Length: 199
Image (cartoon, rainbow, N blue to C red; front, side, top):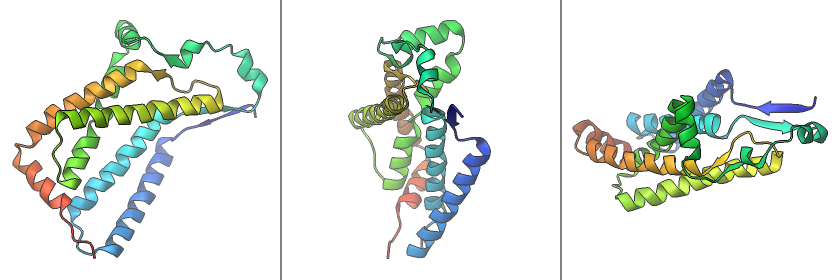
């Protein structure tokens, strides 16, 4: 075997999600019997979201055991790092593949501030959201770069446009949160999912 591909296929994805969710519910209820259904549901949704991030933003990862095969591929540096702003954005628009690339990166981190507001009963301002979005996207690009460095194969590309789109998504999340804050269902969910008494 010259190489392997590490990926989170859907059957494995749902097995991991189910096991993780069951363990979370079990240990949470064991610590506190008064946990609300909303509290559990939101955190199970977040587990699902984190697994989606791993599946689409980190994986698949190609690992080569034969260095000669890897060298024979003659992979250019541009396949590892894309440092020109809006280069990927413009090329994906021209090729017609912009839906996944652009929209996917914009909505990637939108659930994070919503989850934090719901579970911590906290309200973000725009500056805090921008800082949060920048930290999240830098961490993600660093993880992708580290994988590239260790495997010497560009399973993912460290792309400046990803950072731009991720931060743009956080700005969109700010507008969405301001709208949701006026919705009574969201307000009630925010109260019930953040209030819990730990024993």
